[in-house]
Length: 92
Image (cartoon, rainbow, N blue to C red; front, side, top):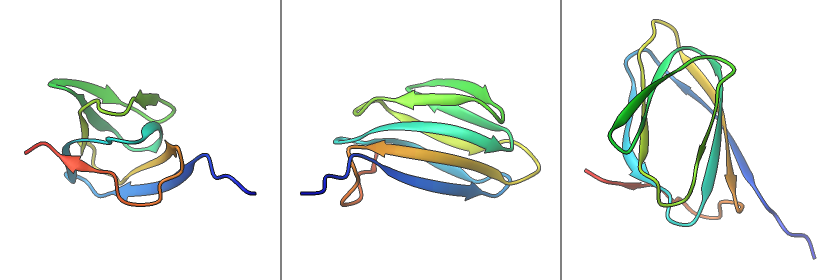
């Protein structure tokens, strides 16, 4: 029997794009930032993130992102366990 343990998404967000505060109820996620500059929100605290930075979001922890740069933001996001259905629950 094969068991999937993670799902990966490569995302691209244009300048000024934002993904509002949300939680994942059944998944942890690890974000690796490849290109661009962003402001990562964890709860109500904003942290500037640059290429090469990695961030871990445990399930249930509120987070969001805003592309603050002039070029697209590119990031690789890994979810564990494997995502079988959408698990993004917006707070507002």
